[in-house]
Image 1 (cartoon, one colour):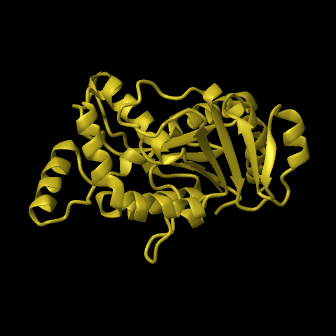
Image 2 (image 1 turned 90 degrees about the horizontal axis):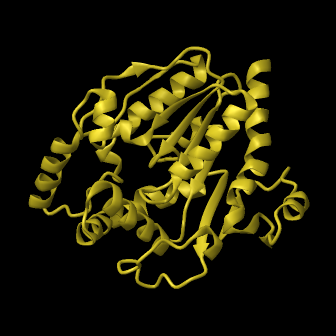
Length: 290
């Protein structure tokens, strides 16, 4: 953690909705005149697409059926921790981009499934913003969580997460439902052991809960809308959070526990603006005075 060069980390698995949360952060940064540098978790995968396919086959042949991008050893987490550490100390660091598709390839000049070269952060940033799979990892050998100043978890209930992933991967990546199902099954061990433990390290979790039937996510014809959902917002440390103010400002919300507030799904952006804006401003103010 660093008062001079703060780091915000948004963590969630594939299909969780972290990209939507990133949009809200971008709005806050733009409105408040905050200059951020961003890194994506995909930049810290260990393998490009072809090498990952070969590594998966090697693992399968050896009887390891649980290896996936969720796995710690499929990523260069020591490098991610080093970037967090360097930025916290100096405001400098580096990242790269994993190119997913033809559109990104045209923009970056790198074939799909490959990485761009490493590039240095722009100078003069107010904070570092991370969005990806492993932004709150804490193990015996790695402590990424301890180097982030504000950690946000995006954790829809599991069936909703799967529905969102299936629809996204079919629409934007051309996968079949069967192919996405295979990926979900392959990732389950790492989801339990690598992804879920991070949500005990996060400062705030946003968990969307549909109020329509999602009992079979593999046949769901559409993603439940915000109007068909509730969002549970859990604060690790509720001290300093003005819950009466939030309940009064967010119509239809209520406290479910001493550290949790439940809101209508269509009020998520408003809730994030109300909750996160003062926290971000405080980090930046402390940074500028440090």
